[in-house]
Length: 331
Image 1 (cartoon, rainbow, N blue to C red):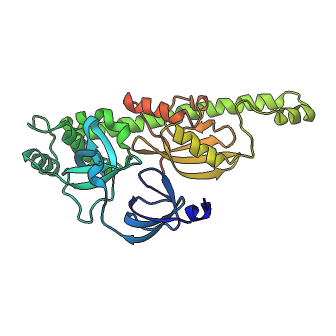
Image 2 (cartoon, rainbow, N blue to C red):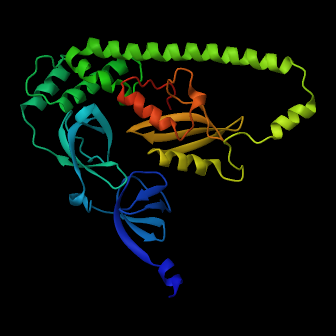
Image 3 (cartoon, rainbow, N blue to C red):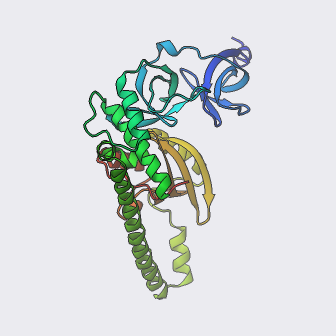
């Protein structure tokens, strides 16, 4: 068999491109030769490299799982008050809180499919939002629509109070916000601020204590030879320095169900890692050799150093599931 013919084989595929350096085909992830604007593109695929040739219409959606929910911005709010990013939205923006359907693409992303037939509940929710009212006492409003309404209230309060929030931080309280209205939304956001400020105070105390401990350790008599030997000894759990830490970070996140978005090298042999997990974007700082967490980017009550980049997503999942997630590092 002439393997050169196989390696040189060129295929054509219509795929949704969401941006970045890769695009997902049904069975594999491909590297994009030249990034283009997000959309449905006809790609020329050779090996593991895809080259965008022309814009195309969606293909293959009918065979994919359908997900229904209500639009909030560029997210689809579905059962459980989960607010997932909705990719490749139409040029004409859907009405607020519109009932839509999406398809679950092979990489887990939700791709917009179309508008669904609405009832009176969506109109009632839109009117309540326009008039600054709550949904308390409203009939026939599904839990997903109530959640989308609550997120919209929080978004309005966020702009007014200049307090950022991520949907996963408020998921456990969003239905209460829908029932309580604007006052409840503001209360929820101020609670987030209090949690973040408490985290910063506790971190400052820990850093001061660590600084004092380091100063005391440095004051003790150590010879230069002892210091050199200590620095030369391999650190427990560290891998060989020949392996690219960015590749190890990507593998660690992938094994935990997260997806690497960006890596920035910092001083002190550290990496700033940006990744997507459970429909949210997180930024953590880790040691480049061991991938031990230096700053999780979420409140872990001072236990950041007890987890690694590979185990951090499971900790985040538990925080989301129990309604205690507080994000401390935003882009």
